[in-house]
Length: 142
Ligand SMILES: [Zn+2]
Image (cartoon, rainbow, N blue to C red; front, side, top):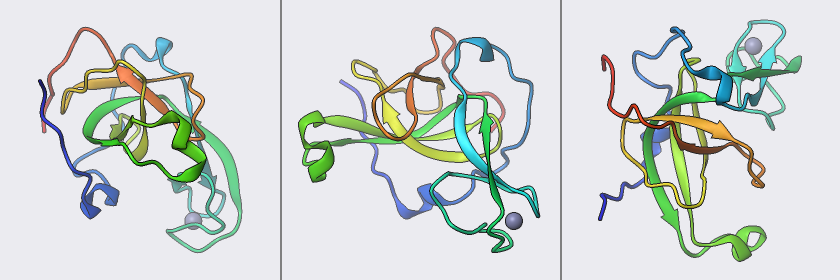
């Protein structure tokens, strides 16, 4: 039995105190596709038309290491039509080591642990899929 978390609106805010740090164990994690603003350098999730920082439309493909910490998650039981066949599944909010917060999916069979290290793995969903990065759970300086 494990605790369930609810994704609140604050889940979409930038992570507090996050920033570039040493990237240990990155080799096994799948890079995550993002976009980088050619004008201000901001890195953000793909799919947007303009930079959220400076409104530039010069967004270029980029990627960041697929490692981070599990912030929160929730189980989707009544999925949108396009994902109906896949329910139930877990949606996760992950604070990437690269200093970004992303929403993705937990790989099937994953037992989520809040604050524990995760890594991106190949998945079918049109957004990153994560699993727990075994076996070193726990958090570093918060
Ligand atoms: Zn920009």
